[in-house]
Image (tube, rainbow over all chains, first blue to last red; front, side, top):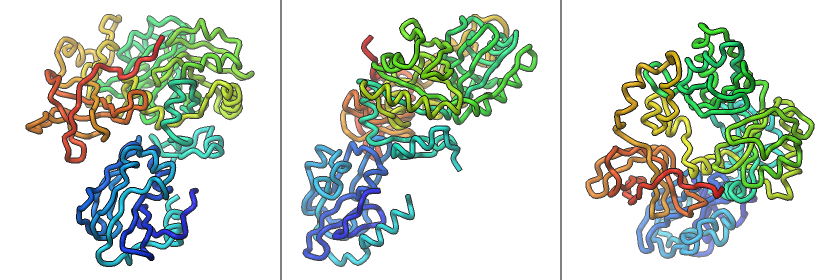
Length: 129
Length: 363
């Protein structure tokens, strides 16, 4: 079982969110737990820079050898940056889920109250495994 | 509740991701499925296939019983040889694809897919009633381990005195491997040279350990169902439930050559299949290659580019590690050869029809 960083927040859809406490621009990726479950990621579709998204919207896809999953916006706002490196090399999602494998950045509009703490996400994933 | 194989503890110790497959708890992968896939192409992979069914047909008329029960000419097999064949229903629909090994004049082993073997065993027993033959499902007693890849012969050679070089493709012989009895067959489902070892269930763990140790210097890796699926797809091999089903005949699947109308006597399905042998099927099984990176998957529609008319359906699809792009098998309306696309979740991705298999090993 991969460790779950304490300083991030999470969604039930197995995404992580950084920067909630210290700014308006949040970084989003998928968790190592999700990357392990998917297997080798071969294709990532990220949202377009400048697009407006609502919390819970399907905004992209993560495709592995065996399956494909939607990528969701964890909060509402505007997509301000995407990680071209992970589009070019989707294996970064597996090798460095919480670092080089980040997916996109979003400028928060509204609140981010529905996110899970590391403790809550740990409980969620231990219930599933 | 999924049934474990005799190697469950081994898979858990290796950290495998386990999955339910046809009612069995099977290793999906041990780490990266792409690494396992490439190991089989370049060195060797070790597979647990204990979910497959082993049904024995024995007796003076065992060969004749199988000629009647299956579409192949089984009684013509030489002892020690094996044949790919199918069992169909009276309407010609494929109930399963099989490999039959002739172990002796009056002894055959029918290897059936995990999801189908109880039904295959029951059908064989019923179809054999008029013959002096006994059908016995011994799947519970057997484990099956496969060593596949260009270095599989060298690895197995470390553990057996059997003449592996003299063993032809689609042949099997009884041998001792690491001091234990095994039926060693030169068969597989990966497109590589390789061997399948039919062994007593209780010998599975020690043989897996012996193969792991002998294979270590050769780059042998355990490989799961995920790699097995991408390997067989590259090799253009059909999977029951994807390319084959009871709704399709062997001719629909482009496998009419396995139906042997030249054998003596009647067989189940003959009356339904004989009129079809010279009729081009409405759809044919083809290989597809996409130019994009999104993967056409099982069930996705094949469409005519431009007007979007449905022209077929994808049966299997995956990213191909050997080709570096997504590949798929699909049933496509006969007569169409270009201007096609696959509807990948609403987007029409252009595809080219290519000859199967996608990958052929260098001899």
